[in-house]
Amino acid sequence: MRIDIGQAVLQENAKVAAELRAMLAARGILSVNLIGSPGSGKTAILERTLARLRDTPLRVAVLTGDIQTDADAQRLSRYGFEARQITTAGACHLDARMVLRAMDGWDLDQIDLLLIENVGNLVCPTSYDLGEAAKIVVLSVTEGEEKPLKYPGIFFRSALMLLSKCDLLPYVPFDPELAIRNARTIHPEIDVVRVSAINGEGFDEWMEWLLARRKTS
Ligand SMILES: Nc1nc2c(ncn2[C@@H]2O[C@H](COP(=O)(O)OP(=O)(O)OP(=O)(O)O)[C@@H](O)[C@H]2O)c(=O)[nH]1
Ligand SMILES: [Mg+2]
Image (cartoon, rainbow, N blue to C red; front, top):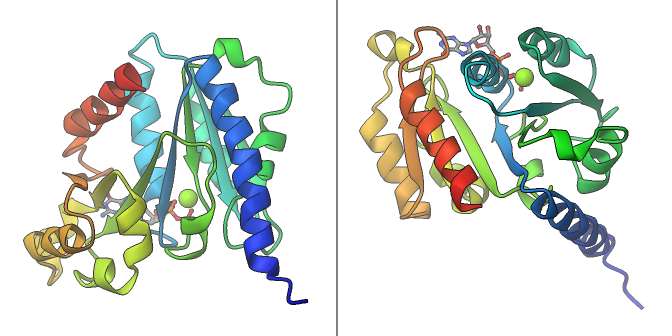
């Protein structure tokens, strides 16, 4: 008998993710899962997002995944919200059980929005449902316009592409229109917001996108 371990792992993850999704839905918590290459700017986006969310009544919690170190959780805990690190000790993605475990002890009735930063990787996190309402792919302008074509899975599954580091556009040979066309070749309905965590470009639009999701989820 041939046992497909990969499939079994994904099926088990799907079960836990379904539990997680039901748990979050029962409490009206919106959860989003940010996925992108190492250094694409996920934590920087979340830092600026948390700074903006301080001006809203929303109660936010953040989970951030890395193979080693709690450096990102330290950065994210400066904004007055709960932030916890998940260190995967080698795994190139978060899974639903890691998320469930990391939430242990949180009073879910005190949370409106759960922001999850996945391990920096454009491939492995794609197949792992974390019970989120939406996956968001972060592509920075230093990575090349062809990335959506080379790594189609994550672009196909994401509701939104955050095109990050747009402040660098004058200095790098990157055509944002082509990158967006490529993303929409893979996923015609994908939303796109151009952002810069350095100068705040696009953050009004990104916050609007996020808060609109909360109303509809
Ligand atoms: N110019 C510019 N640099 C940025 C921007 N966002 C992030 N950076 C820089 O890019 C580098 C990586 O940013 P991070 O936010 O740590 O990236 P990350 O995706 O969280 O990285 P991992 O968690 O390791 O996958 C840092 O040196 C940031 O200062 C941006 O909008 N513009
Ligand atoms: Mg990070």
